[in-house]
Image 1 (tube, rainbow, N blue to C red):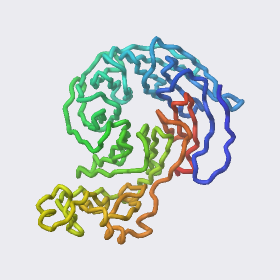
Image 2 (cartoon, rainbow, N blue to C red):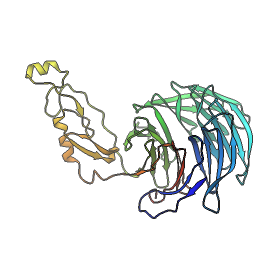
Image 3 (cartoon, one colour):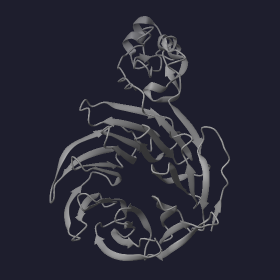
Image 4 (cartoon, helix red, strand yellow):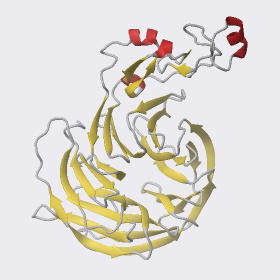
Length: 400
């Protein structure tokens, strides 16, 4: 059922500890059980499984339960052992796990949505169950009574959801690329603000209540760090993936962000550095370095008898430049550019080797990731892939 991998000491790399297999379909969501050497998985094959590590070093299911439809997402609260599962039908099914994790008892079913449930979040402090669905509704229920407390209609179906207990703010990321902040009350909600920085749909959200920053990942391959607590509208871009962002986790004790993408990439970002916002791109009808006209500037092309050039932008200063004046490439890690990007010649000369020092490390999970979960108590990371395999990683060599 599960093969144990003997860890090999490798400096500064995640260490693969175990693989859990035997699924008939993709695992849509899974979590590491804190202090238990266990994993809970829900799958498109309609199964809920609780895996416990045996003396052999292998993981075997102590609970194997088949639902009537596919399980799309879940939320697990270790304190109450409450498992809330979003279903393909739009309902949310709750179970209570026994102390030894060998039994699962049905608790309640919520008729929450008209379409597939996309995210479920259980908030113990409020006794609320938050959920979003492909019906474009964000809802919250009382977990004690099962009563629906409120609903909010979003402009597109939601793919990311986080909640801040202190302010009662819900952060909702949707398929249009927009993030909405809602203030929740017991039976109503109000719109706080919306912001948009991605060109693709929001695929993952992660909230750090200590630093009061929100991280959003997108299908446009980028991550944005939104400084909510600073109230200055600061947004820092992180460019280090070549495919859609599938998961974000923040290790607050080391101030490192863990991100993964659908091409199997795992990136560890050092957030304990002073990062810079990327500049706004400037508008101009001619190159702001050599003053050559761009191809739409017919008047200047005619007056100077010159052929119009294509417009580019320097990623460091934001100026509009021609290809000749921006022939160089460079990484700018403190601006979030871990890959080489276009910069103008003068900016290229100003970038030092110290400026090019990486602020992230890159690792290959060797499977196409659809979901991830990080357990800060053990330093272990779980990744689920399209290969129907769960991998468990020791991240302490890189998250420390």
